[in-house]
Length: 314
Image (cartoon, rainbow, N blue to C red):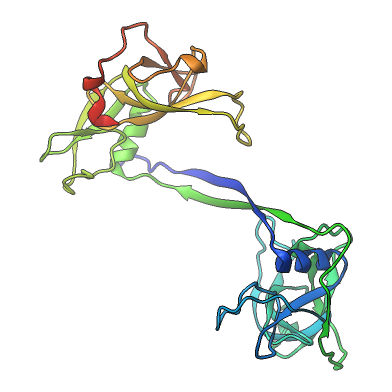
């Protein structure tokens, strides 16, 4: 039985968003060790604050300050923290209803073990030493013995140098294991060959293969070697440098219809100025030493393909 292929993969991008007046006041308040909620038309105080009432959809703007102490309403123990989680040691995920609030805030509780955590326990905020205007300005919650509670008080929401935008890194780590069709495709690439599969119904050849025809929905098994040359069907010029990608901008990323294939695949175009790449350009793969896939595609020097030869693959 052949070895099962697998590889760790990471999808990561920074998500940037601007803040409205409510979220701006909330995050700026955290920077200043102040927790703000918003009051609804029926008098409830929501923490974290939202800009619209989740029940009535009424716009909310009346800010109010709540206490930095509160009560755990529910919890779950995390024995093995993951990368970039708030604490590096085992902790509890907790929902905390801060004194003066009517809703609970999700955060973490620093506790020695699950036996030290219970619903109804009193806790308080431990502030981060360095604060920037983010939810991480609350380093965590910690046990607190006081039974005293506090009411919310009106707050203008005005601070010096308010936070107006945030950048949140979104990341997904996972292990990918290809099936039969893609394993054959990847193994062929390691031999500097490109292999697709032909649909037994429509007779189209798909690269990379998925084990089934996307048009007919029937299983595919007949392997067909295609390329190595192909035609640029369409392309884009990339002007923003990607993190951890050692390619200088601008560069061109294109759809390339390999000879004998009925589906275009993606590839970077090199060996030609970015502003000279065009639809119909004939290209061939360039392999780096020891690589399992083409590094990029370069012009072959052949005349451009006629538009009618690839228009169905756009």
